[in-house]
Image 1 (cartoon, helix red, strand yellow):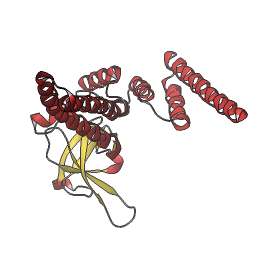
Image 2: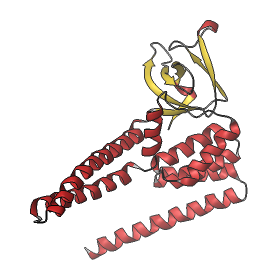
Image 3: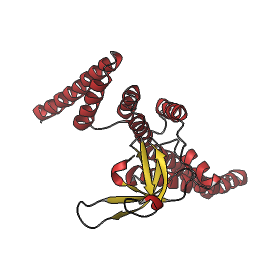
Image 4: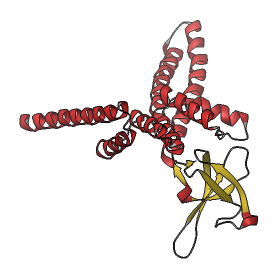
Length: 256
């Protein structure tokens, strides 16, 4: 038993040290302006040790230094999915978009945009923790209403429980929403320098060209179609800023 525990601890320490050494090598390559080498090391680290918000942020910075704007935006977006409180990733994403004159995708509803921007400030895990804390407070308020003799305490418990119940339901909804966003991957980034979108799910003729989008543009995937024949091609029906829904070849986008 002791030997197994020692082996587990040793393996954990080795993994941590190896990851730290890999990160140091990548950071060193980045600081020496060897950005392509840094990207290779960061990508290898992601395959070996898994992804993280900081790792995606570092990849975004390295790609931006290589002037790979779509890749930079993709990784900053992925960093924010894992950790919406990553202020550096959010600031860099905004900077790259503004400098590259790329419009940010928003819905047609102000309330929808307000909801999404508010909820996305925290991760699903953080919302779940807040929800658990609120639930404990709710139980305490209910207990105060049931067991306290003071009329004032019972009133506070009653009205407090009502308010806390609403907050609990809201925070649980926020947690599930953020979890859904992280798992379903309905948003994507246009990767070519320019992508041509079609009015139908196939390569467009001159009359079927809907519009063109700049690389780095964020789109929301609403539907998908797999074409028959060889080679098999997947087309996504997407929505983008200030444009009607249109179809784009799946090879021209990468899901966040």
